[in-house]
Image (cartoon, rainbow, N blue to C red; front, side, top):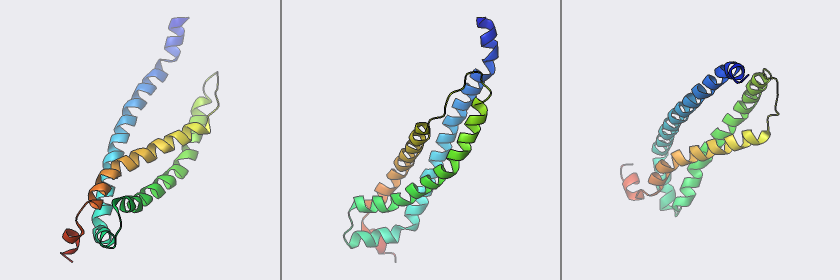
Length: 141
């Protein structure tokens, strides 16, 4: 009986391993993309950051202003991804004899993890931009 069950779920174990490998690869590639986007956004808004610093903005305010765009992008991405993921999971779990419910908590936790990862990756560039001297930024304009 054990051999029969192992044979039945062998494909599922292979799919699980493959999914784990590709998930790690996707998270790494998306983190590089987010870092590039953060670098591009801070470079594009360098003059604005300098003017805000001259007018008295502290680094926390600058980081908050730059992070709002990432939060908006992550919300849009989650609104698009959650229904698709729900439908794919529902059809995949429908193939099993014992079915389980898909909890909304899974989607909320994954969204929070993605938002945390996006803010963590973009924080390095935004903190660097918020600590630059405004004189160095504005003297070339």
